[in-house]
Image (cartoon, rainbow, N blue to C red; front, side, top):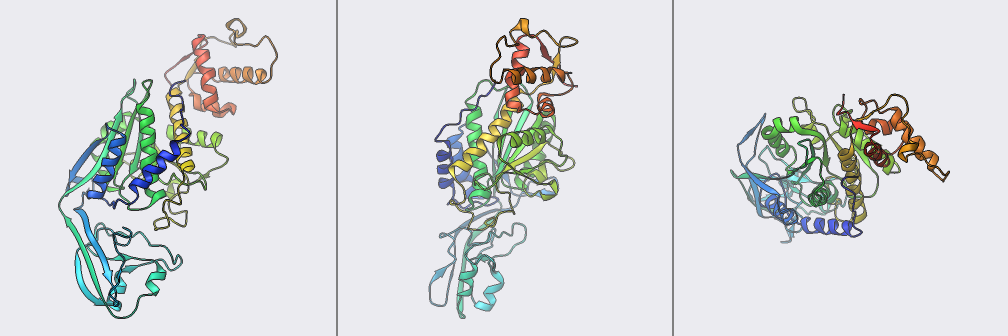
Length: 436
């Protein structure tokens, strides 16, 4: 069986440490925080290629925005205390805030403040990427404690032509058929919504890079959400369409609360079938969503005119857990076990994809299994089930159904069926028809 899963006992701890290291870095669509994060990941994946795209570059209906960097940002209250300090928590500053150095009353300041009344201890994540404005984010509890008086607002940011940065890693296989793994690297300090994706992608890339028996080619993309994937697709659409047989958008995959599935727009692609099959056989339960509930970069990969077979296997889905897009999505929300389990599920998907083919029987009627050593001469526990599974596989080995379809039809785990199918191929009972 190609690409055996080798899940080290300490893998979850390793992934969690990567998340801890990346957590404080102030990321956005562009800027030094993205470069620092990609540089860290490049230490773990030496073949990761890092690309810079100039501001103003056109990508379909979009343009790469100006680069944004922050030196410092804070508010000084009437008592002279510094509050909403960007260096205390980088969610305090609204993303892409323009420079400010001004004094104003609390009444004048309030329209520039953002909080969540129903979550009094959470700092919200707020951005204004494409409209020039400024703002600060704070907890509702902090906001209610603000006193009347004069406040000084300081934002030392730079919003000017520069670059958007993204990373790409391609691991060639024996075939030009590709599996895409995409994740984004633009959100500031949020653990499940942001960092779980890059660290799970990195673990998968390292696992695949260490295998020399890859049949398929694997493409990993680490890019800012929306504009990053749009730009990437605009430059690679022909090859993505030509080679991608399945893709996975990695996000929100680090907690232990639940499993969630976001289908592709079509809902019937190879990626959809693999993901649903693995989730059915290897989780206790999962929540299946509609593409109408989309919200990550599957929006771009699955859009009309692109239409790639991209799905998401998540834990708690974006927008569906209370800590989403707030400071409460911190390192206490993700766990080593949650990260490792998500890696393992994707490894199982890869294993199914690597071994999937269209079995075709070589003989009319049932082949003689006994003379090939495929029929037990002693009655043992489970021997009858093994024979039944073998015969059921042969009953549907018509060259039109792939192994996943047969596994679904006869009600077995495809990962268990792979060994049976390979044995039948070795014995010359079935061949790969190459598909309809």
